[in-house]
Length: 164
Length: 476
Image (cartoon, rainbow over all chains, first blue to last red; front, side, top):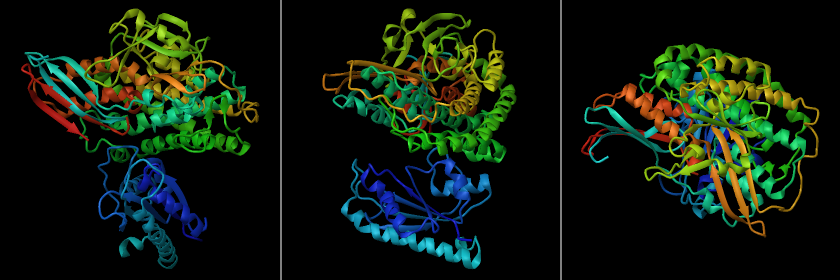
């Protein structure tokens, strides 16, 4: 049985580099078949996504970030937690995976891959520096997808967290 | 107020938008006045001037990420008036479905995500635990039910409108695409679960409310008018009908008013301490013309829902207090009655033989220079009023939003709660929680009503008679 990978592209494509994940997700739709990964586009992470996340073997969150050197890509394992949530309609990946576990009893392997943006002004174009980082962002998402699949195939669910 | 004492709550949490509360104390340390300040501003009425009128539904939906569909509906109805067309019956039914689907998801957000921590964990609980995880720890089924009801509403919006937030499917003259048989059947399959959740949630709330007698007695429990759109036969509606006002005895003060003539009976007052305007009933003046809108008002005004389970729930709701239900605490139960109605009504509409008709849009050029659209949004009656020039470009926009219409009542409710619970110069957790909780009962959407973006943190300041801040609490 193929592993179930969910890629969540988070951002607002009307705010320049904040939409970088959506651009990456567009490219990923051409690189990955629906059997390999389900790709969804969201403005923000909502509690309603918890069930969907719980039904996967791995979740990859793509997003833009404000801090750091523009164009720099950071990959982190999502550590379940951050249960001090206040907002009910804007969650972090850690809160969403925690919710997924608390409500539906499953916490998939989860990674966040983010790119530091240069401009978050109104506009539908990426800045050049973030545009240049797009292939690496897509490549990282593809590599993680394959990695989760391989790990799931070889070791069963649950081992990635330990190795990440 | 130079010689008063004041408490300020800033920001107010778990609501939609940014605000703060100021409580003024008299010389004995008792609360003598309260103000709910909305501290954000957007200006939607101004910056659409010069845009083509047919863009308005999609542009106006950008006011809010929670209730964009309400703005779509009111805006499209205003544009229908500019076209001077009667939209096809199927388009109207499809608009009704998407409108009440949004009521379900918005009410579910308010009750299950924002207010259920207060109800489940108690008003004195630690704010750090008063969130969805706190609800999960205490009652995981309730948390799952809230999420499922949200999903129910959202999937309908997504199937009809193409996306959950800011769908552009509702257009002047109707809707842009007919409903497919696959989407109809897929939605119908989800109805039984939504209905079951609504029924058990209502039972849960009725049982839970028994622990809150004190809060019920002081959470906005005062005489006022209530206003909503209602069907001519007294039935509950979210799409069209006449405007009706009832008073605290349940008697009609004015009925069969034309929603498009709102300016003849509604006034708006600007206060220097808030970006949120206060609406009032013109014939009673300001502030005696205080009225409430939203679920509590709708259920106080309507005599029946028109669906079996909701009718039964409405009859029980009317038993809560004699004559009209005055306590704003009961907004919560009213929301669940309405959710029940909406789910039942969605099923009825989807089973209508006309619902799959391909004729869903009337095409016309502008035939009028002035158009008003009114509908019931989750939080109350919503008015959009546009004027266009000979080229169809917007010259003037006026929006009257539900939260603004509840502004006077929210201020009075905060005062009532504060006078009951606040004593002395020190703010306590329980007092603060209750002041916030009474605001949440109204489910204010400040994004819409100030035409602002974001969540609503809370700030409370306590100010003494000399104007000094003696205590201040901020939550973000």
